[in-house]
Length: 191
Ligand SMILES: [Zn+2]
Image (cartoon, rainbow, N blue to C red; front, side, top):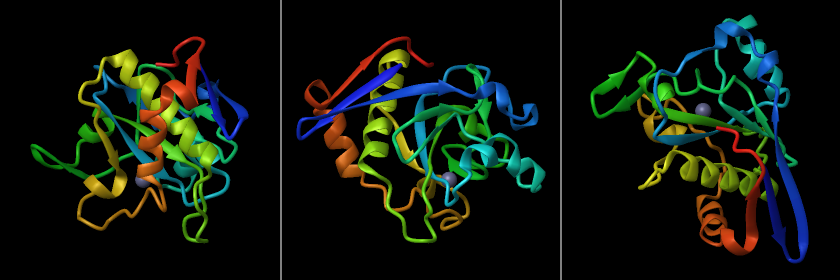
């Protein structure tokens, strides 16, 4: 899938790069069903692809995601299609405290590379790429309503996570609402 985004007459193109072959096989498992929404994260790091595909395991803190969005807006598939990544950790859901990975299984994890602690703010390109990716997922899975969470919204106990850091939800939703004029999607669907 490619996402074409124009702002003030400047056209930009984001493509989904499948890097899932590089991922440590202990950082994902069969999803066993279709996801019904997304969870957005920021990485608070700089070598995020390596961290999500093996570094986290080597550090004894296994974590992955379905997709990573670089500062340029480049979208990288982290785990293979049909697999569930380990992005949410312990969360709250309708059944109570989820320590079994239900939230990671149910929601597609999208990591945005960003140095949270250093006060960095996600780029407009990252917002546009995320908006395009979410629109493509919603169309593919026929999500209505569309369910979107920030990690901080479901992490348990409350306050365990504060990401996505400085994410501009209003801007993202504006991009999604104006997709017909600012974002176009074409090419093979990545889901
Ligand atoms: Zn997170």
